Image (cartoon, rainbow over all chains, first blue to last red; front, side, top):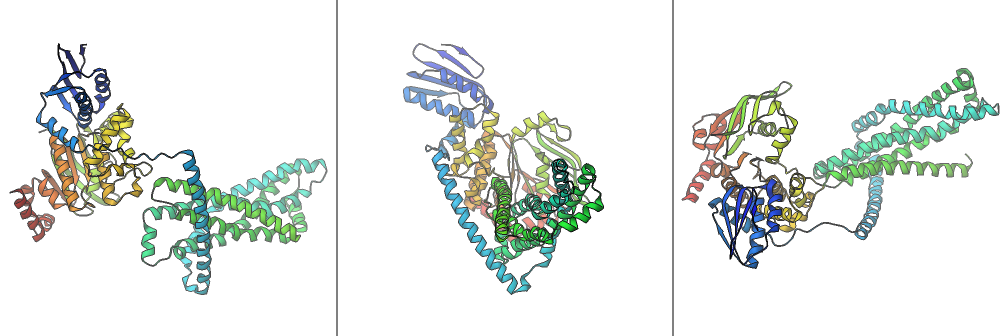
Length: 370
Length: 258
């Protein structure tokens, strides 16, 4: 067997094998050298010569070590021509050789299933704890009004309320328009054109405006709360606050919750108006109902209770969104992935609970006959 | 002597705040070069400019023969494989275990088999003074000192020609810090790597740093070997080296050498 390669030159002599190592025994050449070494079958006696090695690094020396040990277990190996640096590198690496393997963190399906279940239960218990804590904080808040942090509350009303006006105007205008457009065709068939006002008026004020607003706010502010509080947790700002005696509930969570509870009903009111305008616009285009006619009819048919029901939902939705957002933020652990995970969970959870809460309202109000 | 890094008339400013004003320094091949300076003197910024994380406002930076201001994307990518960087706070990837952090570049850039990669990872872990068990842990499960060691192991994974260390011994215990110094010294001698380190550690400066520069008042106020720097009468040099503590450490070191 004679191989003449850039990194290895092998001489097959009568009673022994001579391996001449040459070139650069470094990281990028390692795979090539490794393949060549694999072809060498262990012999009784091997002479391994390193005088041709121009460069080496730890991966090259480690590769040598692996094969040196393998050859040595099969016969005699004589090393020649190595430099002092190579020998020192060998000794350094030999000293740092670990026999035990690094534990692998692989989790099977069952393990993951169990983990998810336990974690799910854990999150549930923690949320209950959070809710309890929140309730107590709320009560204490109002018994000692000095605790109320007006500056933070107004700041968050601005951030989550005022700056959301444009996007809420856009979405509710479009939704109002779509409702009118879709029903216009059907209503026209029955000649019941004017009933579009009843339909749009009730559906927008009672259901659509609160839902649309809550969903937009959950996506906008709920996620922001999670990310802010989560980042503060990673940078240990929350721990710092706690040690200084600033309860995160008073400084972070309650101001956000209260701000949202104030802002959301106002936003719903705003969405009512803009949604109605959208619907008015579509009605005049499609059914030739003038704005004047629309408003007159609206005053006639839309009883004020529908409007109030829509508004009343606001604080409930707001509380859900803010609580879930803040709770998820506090669940962030020390790694960057968890911020993304918790933010997604925050938005998904709050939209789900908003819709569930809305359904609950529907059932209760219908039972009561309102 | 061949220059590995050459910074020429570097100006760094953010708006009206000027951090570096026509700062120049040179790092030769095979030396351990220290960067010293007061807090806020822009040591880390200078390091970031060397590793292409930040562009200087003006001036020119050469690293391993590349002019950084007009380096092509391909050249930049190749250059990035030739150095290792230890960040001040580790900057380990939190979604990967320590072993995976160290293995990452080997896996992406070389065709080394899994078995040999494991060998390399294990030796690096041991070299920096960690146990095999630590390889399976996530960064969030490590202590501060362990993060530093794991980050050094990651910086060493590719056997880089050039090693950038941002305060490598801060956060380590004194024994660990000295072992760290010894390891850097050994690697320099065996592999001929060049090391650029930001450090405040007097023992490191006395024992392993060949040459260093002192950053103050937006300039390099002193550069060279310890003897050269000590001749400077800049207030920072006076304050840092000419006090009882520093003198004490120096004498201890001399005694230890003898």
